[in-house]
Image 1 (cartoon, protein in one colour):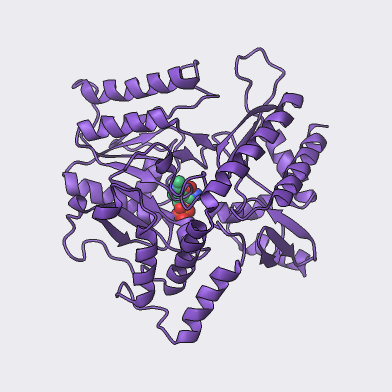
Image 2: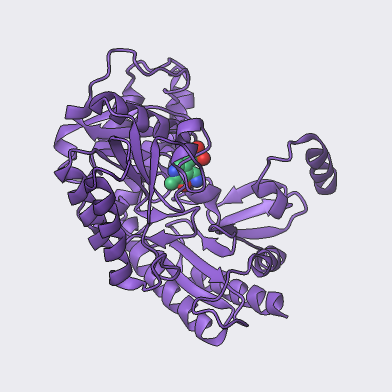
Length: 430
Ligand code: PMP
C-alpha cells in the first residue's frame, strides 16, 4: 500500500510540495513522539508538524477536548460568533500573555494559518499608524501570502526595509557575539534616524525572537530589548512573530518572555491550535482602530481547534512544560556541542529550549567561518530517516538540521533521538 500511495501522490501532487519530498513515508498512526508508517515502520518525529505539536501526536488531553466538543452537539462552524469554546480558549490564552499586555489586550481571530495572522498584523499596524513602510530582518520567515512573503528574507518590496538580524555564527559584520548584535542594532538606529536613508515611514517592525525557518537563530535578549527601545522611542509598533516560538517551545511560554520585552502585537499560530489550524493576533487595545468588519475571513472560528488549543495551553502551563523545555533543551544542546567537538563538519550548534539547530559545513577551507554544506545536511536527514528519526532542514542554504521535538519528550526519548542523530551523522560523513 505504501509504495502505491507514494507513487500516486508524487504523480498527482504539485511539485510545490515540500516535506513529502525528503520524507517519503505514509503515516497511518501516531502517538506522542512516534509516527507509524503504512509499512509498519516507526519513526521518532522531531519535526512535530513544523513545531505545531507541543504535546506530540494525539495527546490524550487534546483528543479528549476534541471529543467533548463533538459529543456535545455544539456547532463546528459558526463563522466568528461567540461560543463557550471560544470563550474558554480566549481565557486560557490571556492567562499566558506577558504581563504588560495581559491587562490591556485585544485578540483577533485570523485563522486558519500563521500567514493569515501575519497579514492581519501588518494590515493592523498600517491602519493604526497611517504609514506603509515595514521594518523586517534578514533571514526572516513569516509565511507565503503576499504581505508575509514580502516581510520574509530574500523577498523584495519597496515598502520593506531589510535590517540585519544578529547572528553569532554567521555574523554579517564578521565579529559575532555581543559586538555583532550591537553593530546590528546601531545599523538599525542609524537607518531610522538619518533623514536621507530613504526608509519609507515605518508602520511597524516585525521580528521572530528566534528565527526558525531561517536556521534556528536565537536573538540575544539585549538586542531584543534594544529593538523594543528603538521602536518605542519612535512610536513604531513592534510585532513579535511567535508562530513557531510560542507555547513553551523556547523554554518560556512566549519567547519574548526571556527578555521581558512586551511587543505591541503578537502573532500566534501552530501550537495554539493543539495540532489543528488556528491563528490569532493579540495586541494592545490602543491599536484596535479597526472599523467593525474591517478584516474578515470565513474560517476564523474553528471550534475543534480552539478546544484542542485550550487543552494544550492549559496542559503546558499546568505541567510547566516551558521549564521542562528549557532544562531538557539545554542538556541536548550540551550533548550536541560535545558531538560537534568530535565532528568538524558540525559548524555550529545553537537554539533555545526545544528549538535546536545543527549547522553542517565543509571544514576543508581557509575561510574563518566554513561554508554551509547542504548536500551533507540532506544526507544526514536521509540517514536519520533510515534510522527512524524524522528531522527537518532549514536555514538560508538548507544546511541546518532542525530538531523540534514535542515538549513532552522524556529523557529516554531525548537520548534515543541524539543516538540516532549521531549515528546518522557518522554514516552521512562517510
Ligand atoms: N511565521 C513563522 C515564524 C513561521 O515559522 C511560520 C511557519 N513556519 C509562519 C509564520 C507561517 O505559518 P503558516 O505556514 O501556518 O502560514
